[in-house]
Length: 367
Image 1 (cartoon, rainbow, N blue to C red):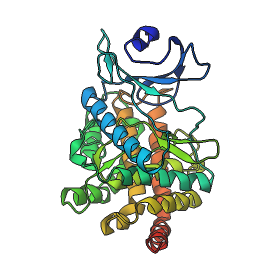
Image 2 (cartoon, rainbow, N blue to C red):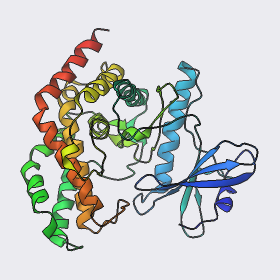
Image 3 (cartoon, helix red, strand yellow):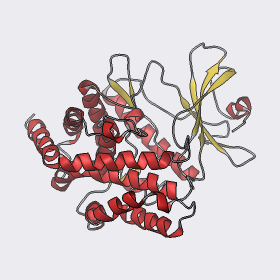
């Protein structure tokens, strides 16, 4: 996207004079830039174009982010006296986004220097820290009513609607790719019924509605130079949901031996030591507020979220890749196959994963 970044930045209340911007080639959804000002040689701001093809209600999305970041910042300042927070930079018109003449939405964050993130985690300390961070994110928002937030993507983790969309895509076969996925179609059909367990429990109010991040990939945790988790980022999908979504999505990204688009499926497997470390960290931050149903379904939530993300990749592949950014023709199919292989590995280790949850609950409930 060719844009005059200096003109866009001029619509925000920045400290200093704009110097330059460097694009970041990461992420599936939004375009991002690191912004420098002339008064500082270090990065100062983080600019993003918000993909309003995917996020239909950008003002609602931005209201969610503002509500959550202000709540978290107030709580952190009261209890921890720390200033490692992501926050929005207001526009000169008082809004927290800028809508340009071509109906593109832009937002500006502070840049948190001296931090890094991980795509693949092979260190149990990092996994434990990540679990604590996302668990604390949930706990710190527990006193903020979930009903205050908008659904930025309705039915985002709703298995019923995702399955319905998938089977419709199979019928429509818009991109003529159905013939390429007979094994994947069988995989989905064989597991569809059991994957409806969590949405049925949500519908029956057997699982509580909480404010959840809904995209708890490990690369959405910022770590400092000592590998302590300091901040959760990428808040576009923060909205009402189930805590199971957050736990499950973190496991499917953080406890996979392979990358999300690994073509060699023999490399895909559940990293049980990482799973155990993350689980202990997560439960350390949440155990006193978890319900019995949430505890009973934490391990299954990892399979649930891995399956649903694989389903989304496969649906996008069948539809011609309108949603996720791709690098090559069958990129989304490769991604789907990685997720489905990881589901199989989790199925093989289901009982052990459940025992790990129970051990962590027993450990932290007594502290």
